[in-house]
Amino acid sequence: MESTIWARNILLGDCVFAKFKLPEGWAIRPTLYPPDVEEYTEHRGLKWAASGFIILDLYAGRDKPLRLEIKAKRSRRWLTRERAARSLGVSADSVREAVAGGHEAYYAVKESRRLLGGRRMEVKLVLYCHETQRTIRFTVEGAPEHVSSCLAEVLELLTSVTCH
Ligand SMILES: [Zn+2]
Image 1 (cartoon, rainbow, N blue to C red):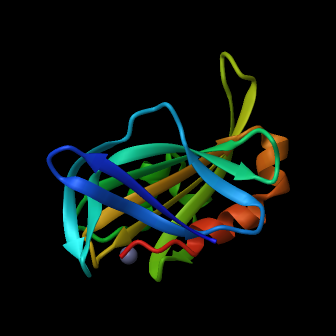
Image 2 (spheres, helix red, strand yellow):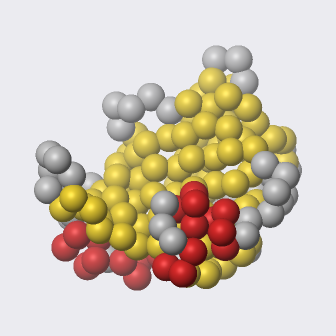
């Protein structure tokens, strides 16, 4: 099933962040966090959110969802490993390479401890879409045992993204 992630801006209209192919039984749902879109790039008849973010619930085979955050930033600069590492919040040698949406991409998986909410695991992937001139960062976050149990599917979901 394809899921189109979009947000409405009163002045700009409906802007698409990305599209995903969801595995069987998975779903992406809106949350109470209001999305933000400040500008868009027009490409193939769609307005692509070029600056902004959206926070969603990603139902990945369990009752409790993972959190999915998508952050877009207008940019004319191609990603380097160093820039990707900064965006992912890790050191350059813990960044891994991938292809996502047909673009060169970088990702990292890390565990962190929260003051409230205990341990969390994050999968972060960043790519530069030259077609829409956007740097897009995807973060999937949840309980470590939940994220690690579906890590391969999460990476598959993120790398098969449509971003232009
Ligand atoms: Zn793209």
